[in-house]
Image (cartoon, rainbow, N blue to C red; front, side, top):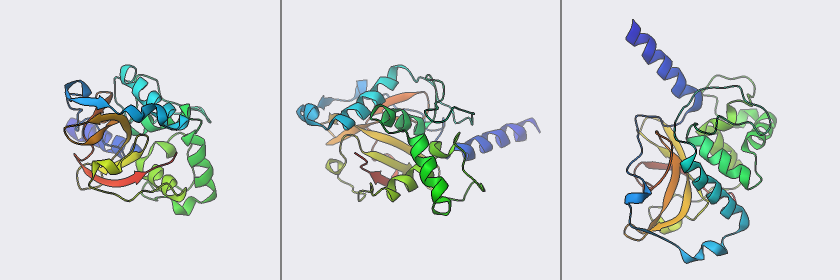
Length: 217
């Protein structure tokens, strides 16, 4: 009975966010990857620089992972800085570029509720959680015309892009940001994400099935 209760709690947590969890731990991190920084970094648009800088700053701050549902302020609400899910990496990074995805997703979802996934059985918006669900972010980015064709060539993914994945072939979702650090060996940029154990910068772009590629800025 005790094991059943633990499993049920874990299942409800996964359903709450719809984001990959601690069973997909981070790899060794970018420190073990022979990467170089592209010299074009200073030519990136200001918004993209802010997004990448903010995402990278989270590496030393957000050292834990949680998919917990929590009541947070609106707008500008956030989880405790030392923790969060994969979606929180993107949300925090976008805020430094002046985009509050909590508010943007809520506004669009409130006006177009039927356009968003109904998988959680909700009948109204929830500013505590809507923007922290990968499928909702996918829908929002697509509705804003940010979709980019999914490619198998690493060069098709640019700094500041958002990527979503299916981790297990059964719909366990994940999201991350494309960094401006380039791995010359694999010919692709690294990603900044939190898949368990905190935010990390890693060469894992093609580790899972890509389900979405978005260029918001």
